Amino acid sequence: MRTALVFSTRPGTQMDDIDLRLLASLKEDAKRKYSDLAYLLNLSAPSVHARVKKLEQLGVIESYTINLNHKMLGAKLTAFVRVTTEGVSCTDIPASFEPYPEVEELHSVAGEESLLLKVRTRDTESLDILLDQIRKIPGVRKTVTSIVLGTRIDRGTDPTAFNPGGVNGNGNGHGHANGK
Image 1 (cartoon, rainbow, N blue to C red):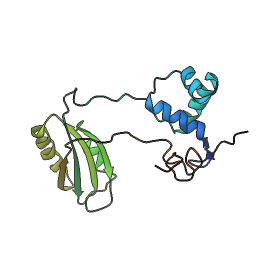
Image 2: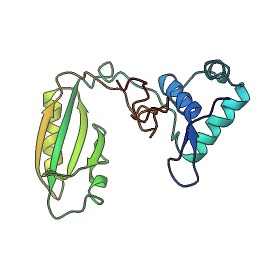
Image 3: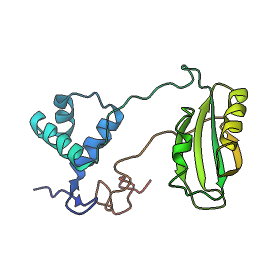
């Protein structure tokens, strides 16, 4: 009899290696049918449905979304903007960035800068205009911008990467038997 590796993500929650494989399959294609997932996981479709519902209720699956080709939509330039703030709380300032749809991500960070933004614009002229607007936000003291020349890896969160024992129970957290 096979023993499933079970780990807890927070008090009262448990996931096993089947849940992690299910998450990896859904991350790859969230439109997969339960019957297809059942075949991949060697489960019944109702069992897969129950696991998905459990993962949704636990908050492990937050939402289902689509990935858009930003370049085809006209957002050809990606940049990371490091923002140094002064006299404002990092919990208060995010609301100031809401009017700017070009700001895709806003992170509070440790270090010299207070915030890290991921932005997408049409071109450098649009980026220049956005940076001028950001610099006018009360509490923004300085910005440092890095323009992305190319993206080599963009994979999102690997659900198996944070399993304390790895999917195979190997303990390296990488989900691979050889640790690579």
